Amino acid sequence: FETVGENEISSDDGETGKIADIGAGAFRDESPMFMYSLTGVYPEENGSDNLQRYPEESGSDNSQFYPDDNHSDDLQFDSDDPEEMEFYLEYSAKLGIKLNGDENKELIMAIDRWMGTPFKMGGCSTSGIDCSCLVKEIFKDVYGIKLNRTSRSIYYNDAIPVKKENLQEGDIICFKIRGRRISHIGIYLKDDKFVHSSRSKGVRINDLNQKYFKKRFFSGGRVKGTDISKR
Image (cartoon, rainbow, N blue to C red; front, side, top):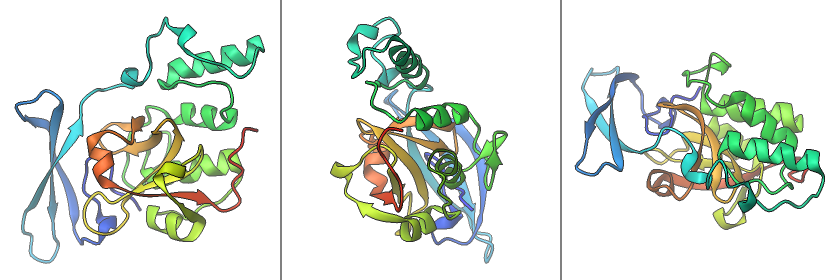
């Protein structure tokens, strides 16, 4: 199962150990742009404290990605259908991303159903979910495709590698949080935005250009048999 979120340590990255959350937000650097979350990995073999510190991009919501609640005129739609426009306007505000009307409605609604769900190591329900199960559940609901359970097995067994510049809606994106193995996964949306389950903040949308994710991005992947076009 997955144990990694936005800025946490994973037992799925090749390390043997138990994860202990010693406290989040206890340390800040001199810049208000970063918050440090402190976690410890205690290897079972010797009980030593292998302490790691990872910066977390500031901001508790996605408002930085959406121009203004009242600036709906900034959004360009491919459809003149009032109901279509109302749908995409509503979900643009809900998800904090600019939608133009050609996105997969089922994918958008599936993401919205999970938004705000807390992270739970090994969890796979609305009471708590980890990153790989979020991807697995969304693909089952939206595309009717059954994926493997871990981020690595999804990437290596269920997907075809895709370069970052060729990412499309519905592609998976994988990260190497520490070490050389894939330990985190999400779903690409558009304009470098992706949805994932963050250990510290639960299911949310982030930007691949954020320093934390840009540094740890490994690869994209297109799930075999996925119809990434709008349904």
